[in-house]
Amino acid sequence: GTVTPTWPLHEATALLGTDGDIMDFCVAILPPAQAQRCPWAPGGRCGKDWNNDLAQRCVRANQNVLRLMSSTSERGWNMCQNVQWISCALNGRLPGQGGKRMHFATLPASLEMHWFDHARPGEWKQCDTCYTVTAVFYTEVCLLSRFC
Image (cartoon, rainbow, N blue to C red; front, top):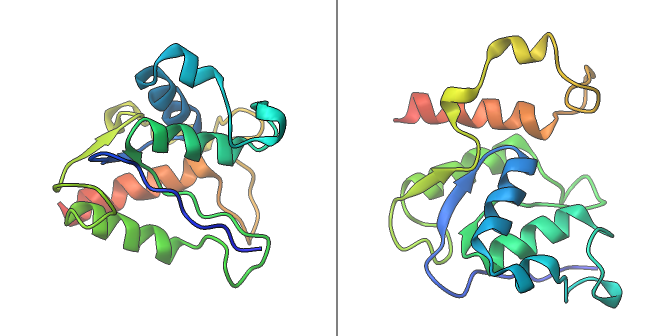
């Protein structure tokens, strides 16, 4: 089925980074009671759907993050959607963004190119049809360096 997007209730700055850092960033903003509860999850238990948990926590923390998940290839994520999201963020056109501000859960200055040669298991796998979220973040930083 189709899931209707949930948008932050207040002004929401665009947030980029690796998934783990984005989750940590959003959880750190929330009051402790909200950070530990997952009312959107079955039985209120966190951890059943990590992508949904990340998206919902960031919405509650008023952070604008890109999460496109679908089981069908026509409606799933692709790099063109990523470029469109970055372009909208740079122009202050994300829902509720309230300006052209962006910030990073993972500092671009912390990225090291040798990561591709020495990635931990699960961070990088070579294949012809996939990108890891960390590899996508590297691409986002490269795009931003060209756009800006």
